Length: 223
Image (tube, rainbow, N blue to C red; front, side, top):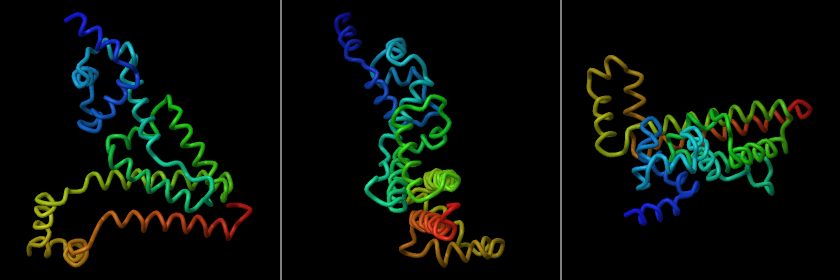
């Protein structure tokens, strides 16, 4: 038995700890995340975890950095607008897979190399078409939109029974009488075949990018 535990301890690495932590966070979120639960998930002991990653904060730093590493960097071969658009689309897809990460993305006090590389690439891309002040505006606005949309999208009812239950509550006569505008919007638009809330992401993203491009053209010395 001692030999078996020693073998497991030798097999444990920082990378294995962080990979396990990422899987666990995806499964239960970070509110319920503890070192004990991580150790159990890895068939290990808390002290073994701490030997490779000294604290829970460092684990969170590490898995946030792993999420940033999954987001596609803007392509330096493209002009700023399509490159930034592709990055934002990638960010939305990655955050959908790791919904727990959104509140932590910009809150860590020790950003990892993938995080810093990502921000550096984004700033460099935006500076390819915008001034420093406009780059600051653009980056803040784009991330507020992407992160906010990811939070909203993750909170929506899931397709199937849950969505049917929500929809049924919006179509009765009492609801229509009390909230007529919302009832009209729901029944004549949002509940129609083919409606997909996800399409609003493309609309909003293009609206932001088009306006940034317009400002850059109208005021080249400022934008």
